[in-house]
Structures are given as structure tokens and as C-alpha cells.
Length: 406
Image (cartoon, helix red, strand yellow):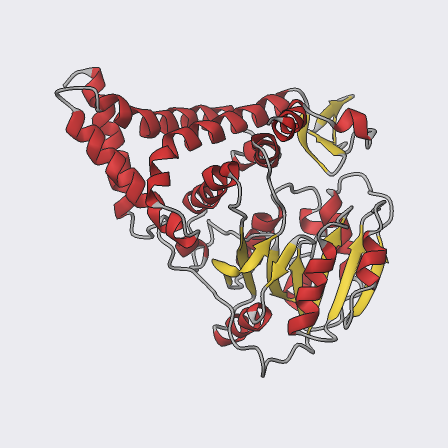
């Protein structure tokens, strides 16, 4: 067999291996949907929401909570919003709302975790729901989360939000975001007693307050950029049980109108997922390139076309459960090579930023990597909050061009 045949055969073998793995990360077996919440009791739960300039979504988030759990305790940790987020939140009824004005960001903390740490001081209930400001729970979802936690004696329940698929870029890339996350953090293993893999989705996490505090709350992960999975790891290390799944009842209100917006969202932490390892980045590049493009190349070979066709078929099969969950045609599976290449480029962009000294950027804040000064290791995670004009990136300009295109 020549090199071309070897590559086609390797791609075939890798896709076949993915399909037969015992934990089958490509399947959607971990799904939690809303239930009838008429008899649910919400007196022992507080919803903790970190928010920074979320005026466009916070009212919808809070109204959804008030509709299914009137009078529920909500703590809004307002992280220096300048757009009236807190004022809009106070106008929503009926809620038992407390707004906490988050102070200046200390050295060594990420913004979201510092806001959560300040808000947690106001939580006195047995359970706390960590909810992102842009996450809307449909009726019965809060009841389903509480029932799951109690029925299965869990300590942390997390739901990966249902992402929008209204636009072409959203259809192309966002279901694949969930697909790749599930390959990287197999839900079946994360939900088992296996300690070496843990996962959570930070947009919606229901946990027991005492468990959270026993794990050091947010102080123990104060500089983590992938804080949700880090929290799940802390919980599992102490012998507690976690669960992560999907749902149509946990909706992300964040829209991505162009490629640039999705690019920035992924590049923010993509290299962090690889533990800032160039070796892992190179390995990921090789495997992704082989699995994505070797089958297509094999289709043009009279000798190995059947290997390419079989590999493409398995590729589409592995992606079809997520497409079905998002109610999209399985034909979108044929775009997976293009999708994988785009995500790979986003990861390389994330790595290049890191090599230039930048760990991440979000909400006007830039987080830089560790520095070595005078023989001592120090951490300087924030490099100012630049003016709005300076916050524009190349991809923001791309969004503007796409919006203005006829």
C-alpha cells in the first residue's frame, strides 16, 4: 500500500474507532428536558448571575425565571456594567432580587469568577444555580434541574446551552462546537465515577452550596479561563458526583451574525483547551487534517475510493446525532471537513495570541500569560481595559463588512 492508501486507511480506522468507542461520545444519550414544574419548590435555591454589560439579554433571562418560579431568590453580580444592566434587572417582577456591585478586579482573578465570588457571599440557600446572563430557561427547566439533582443524588448538574442556528454561520459552526466539545470531554465518562475526566458547561450549573464551598468556591479556580470544567474537576476530586448533558430548555440568547464573532468566541480559550501545548496543537493538526481531508482525497483514487467513501459515511454518521438534536439536515455532515479546518485555524490563532503574551480577551479585558520577573514567577492577568476603539480586532471589522454587504 502506498502513502496515499496508508493515509486513507488511517482515516478510515480513526473514524471507525470513534464509532466503536465504549463511551460513544458522538451519541446524545445525556439529555435533560423540561418537566411539569407545577409542584416544584424553589425555596432552597438561589440563582447567581454574573453580568457585565448585558442589557440586551438580562430582562429575558430574569423574566423566564420569574415566570416559572415567582419570587425566587436571584443574586445579580454586576461587574462594572455601564449600560444600565442593573437598572433593567431591578425592573423585572416578581423576583427576590439582590444586586451586588462587584468591586475592582484584583490581581490574579478572571472577571467572571471574581463576580461569582462576590455574589456567592449573598447566597444562604442549600442550592445555587450559576446562570450566565444570556441563558434563558424555558418553563419547567428549573424544576427538571432540581429533580435531576435530588433523584439521582448528584452534587452538580450542568447543561450545555442550546445554541442559536438562525444564520448560516451559526448552522455551520455552532452544532459542531457542541460535537467537538463532546469528543474532547465525553459526557458518559464525565458523568461516571472516573476521576481523570470532568466536564461542566458554565452557562447553567446547579450545585449544592456546601459542596461548592468545600471545594474552595471560586477562589480555588480564580484565574481559570475554562472555569466550568475546572470546577467540575474540583468537585469530582473530592468524591462528589457530577452530571453534564444537553437540553432544548436551556437557550443561549447570544447571536453570532458573522464568522468573526464565532471566531473570537472560540479563539478566546481554544489553546487553553490544549493546555498551551504546541505538541498537542501539532498532534491535533495532524489528526484533524488526516480525518477531514484524506477521505475526500481518496474519492479521486480508482484504487482507494471505497476507503474514502466509507470514511466519509462514518464521519456523517458520527455528526448526525448532533444535527438531529439541532433539527438540521444530515447533509450538513458533509461540511465537517470545512468546519474542522475552520476550528483548527481558530485554535492556531489562539496559540499565536498566546505566544505573543495574550492568554485571552473578553468584555474589554485582556488576560496575559505568566511572566518571569527578577527570577520570580508572577501573574499579571489583566492588561488594562482599552477604549472601545482599541478593542476592535480584525474579525470585528470583518463582521462590520458582512453586515454592510448587500
